Amino acid sequence: MANSISSMKVKIRHSEETDLEAILTIHKKAFGRDAESNLVKEILVAGQKDKELSLIAYKESAPDELDVPEVLLGHILLSRVRLTDSKSEKVLALAPLAVLPEAQNSGIGSALVSASINQANELGYAAIIALGDGDYYGRFGFEVSSIFGIYPPFEVARQNFRIKTLATFDKTLKGTVIYPETFNSV
Ligand SMILES: CC(C)(COP(=O)(O)OP(=O)(O)OC[C@H]1O[C@@H](n2cnc3c(N)ncnc32)[C@H](O)[C@@H]1OP(=O)(O)O)[C@@H](O)C(=O)NCCC(=O)NCCS
Picture 1 (cartoon, rainbow, N blue to C red):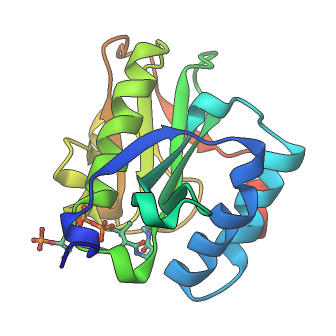
Picture 2: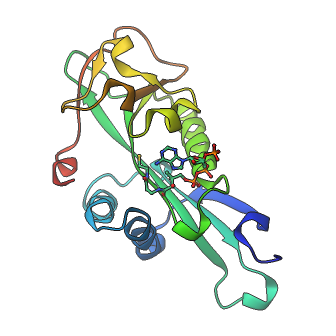
């Protein structure tokens, strides 16, 4: 088991341009389709370039595997969004999040969500929106967004549209979320 995913030490860092192909492969394999990887490509190549909003989980290779210094296992992307009733530019959307199928259920997704929350807090962002399984995101303190007067721009169960409020959050942040144009393709 020396080389099993669960026994290896997984680290997290900002992604670099050279990680792009591995990141796209992670999304394709995790979601079993191209939509999310196409979105990630569009955001990272043509759109938002802040590398601190794109985090990867990786493991360093063993000394006898030095031709591949590290193996990428998971990726999370945060994008800036707007709210209809606020001028704030301090709200992020978490999407997408993916872990290679063979590396799932070993805490990598959780580590990426926690790291992205810390990163957003450090950068002074006020909140992170997450669309997805409410029980999963609830583990990290994401609350149902409608409680705060913040709504999705599409039909979704309220339980599955959540917000993590951060240190600079204030109650004037309200309205319907406006995603960047690139998200319309998913
Ligand atoms: C969702 C995902 C990122 C989780 O990553 P992971 O590294 O497997 O997650 P962790 O090991 O940190 O956590 C595992 C726990 O989350 C739960 N979980 C995993 N995927 C889940 C999902 N889609 N919905 C709800 N719970 C989920 C597991 O059942 C497990 O529960 P347990 O701790 O009670 O056993 C990963 O399964 C994945 O890439 N899935 C395909 C893509 C996807 O659905 N992305 C999320 C988009 S919102």
